[in-house]
Amino acid sequence: MRFAFAKASRQDSRPKGEPKGKAKSTKSSYQPVSVIVCAKNEAQNLRNNIPKWLDQEHPNFQLVLINDASIDQTKEVMEEFAVKDSRITIVNVENNEAFWANKKYALTLGIKRAEHDILLFTDADCEPASRNWIAAMTAGISREKQLVIGYGGYLKIKGSLLNILIRFETVFTALQYLGHAIWGRSYMGVGRNLAYTSNLYYDQSGFMNHMQIPSGDDDLFVNGASTSKNTTLAFQYDSFTLSEPKRSFKNWITQKRRHVNVAHLYKWRDRFKLGLFYSSQLMFVVISVVLLCMQFNWELVTLAIGIRYVVSWTVITSVATKLKEKDTALLYPFLEIFLIIFQLSIFISNLIAKPNRWK
Image 1: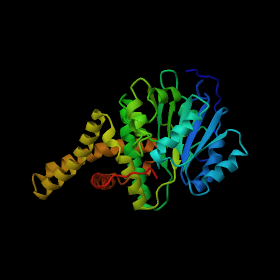
Image 2: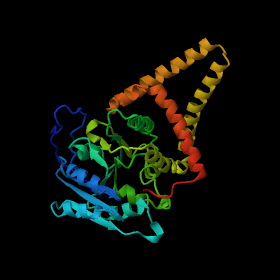
Image 3: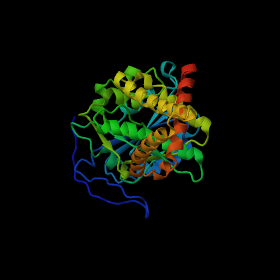
Image 4: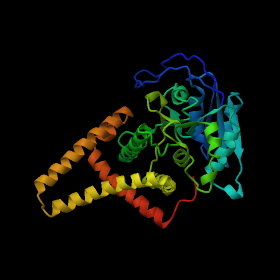
């Protein structure tokens, strides 16, 4: 693969008062990039976010917009912007009987139209946290590092308990996949903010190993392609994306069921680690409640519970602060218990009936 390296200049383009990140200006920051967005019935989100993607402080990028058989004005919105900006490439996908409602099929067609070696993925409802998003997400890519795992957060809605829950779950999940990646054992990434090279994509035969699964274009791809040598992270503020959060519990549950549904296809070691972690959470709560109800040396049990929560609360607060989500850590013990119950209900729901569409 050929990489074009050019000198980059630092330019702080944040609005006044916006949190500062730690984006690094390196000679690789301005490598040519193809930003790829797959959209299905996302007319309004595209109208809001296309200008933000085009406004990036990056001199050489292509914006590939994929219309995945939308029935609203998605295609028309794409065409409206494409007339004004030559950096936009539109891929119009018709429903295919063999790959109906399959995001990976649409993404495959979009990737084939990418003009550059570096592919940066986000969703139609995601906006960059800064004008340096493309540069920050792709700065770490080199001949050795061909996959970048980024953080995709959610916009804050004041006074919304659901919003706090969604953002806490997002931080908690990020703590796990970013932490494992730091240790050289990454197991997933999120399609809201993910970058890799076309070489890596074709070396993995794209999504062919799991094309029949409606979702998993992000975490299953990373699970199969990532190694300790080819993967790096981007978790400074400039590299973040912010998505429009779900507004109802029903829609959020549907989204999480789809995400959790692919976990059984992870590598066995990753399934084991995740299963052990969630089981230990559940067992800790159950055993603590049982021992307290039995009044079994309640002073010692209370002390053990307190030590556990102080340690874990400290870790969660540190990570949430780094990800600009500090407010989600304030109610940590209660949110964790809710999350345990929530994940258990998702697991049971998926055993009864599996989601079969990406949207």
